[in-house]
Length: 316
Image (cartoon, rainbow, N blue to C red; front, side, top):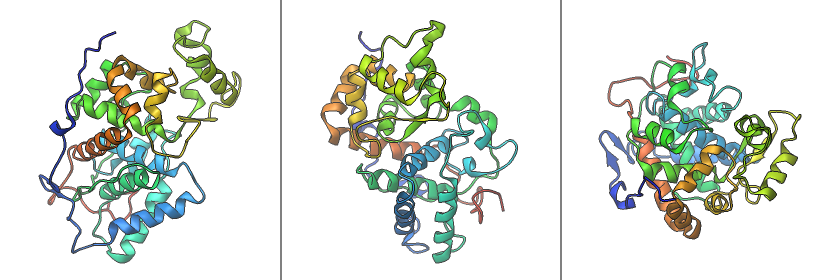
């Protein structure tokens, strides 16, 4: 079926320079020149004990930016925090690693680097450490003073969303269809709890049957991982073959009807784009880096707005 969406040339959104507004890749060049190295070192150390941490950290950046902009608000504790919203509760993770990064960064340049920038740097390091692309992270964000639980409930795309709904939520924060497809490719690593896919496996649309679009062999694998009366918190890998590697397998699997979430499989309504990324990993990597920069530019607090938190979990 022909798609109602068209993919724009990557050059239409690529940021060719190292600045965007008040954000700059050299923002800490004099005040904290080794911040990127510190962030990367802490993540490398964390990977020894937790192979999932890289996918978890990029998800934190994504879920932060889509609510109130990239302001570190997802890190705040509290009864009405974004952590407690449905898309994050009992699934968002990596907060302890962010705390460790903040501690190590503050050891070398105390009170200089924001928690919001730590999330942006951690996302890039997580991708590159997993075999994916690198990019110059634009920096200079400051931390927000409020968390928006309601915003997290409504602004983050659901794993059950239609393509129209996903595109609309991206558009609200200034992202386009290029960004939708490329950022979805982050599901090439990491995992999801069975509670998010059980209906696809056993009771799709209340039919009592599995989603007919799922590849039968893949369905069998998923049912083994997520048995009918098993734990809802069991983990299914997005990519069973290279679960911790950032590559273009996500798109190859979509073409085989092996998308894990309904929101993954809906991308097949744009088979040309999916096929392009499945055949050309370099093209995917380039588009992904552009999309990550674009996402990192969502409504940052700069200048005298916000603050530089001393503790990422609470305001000063």
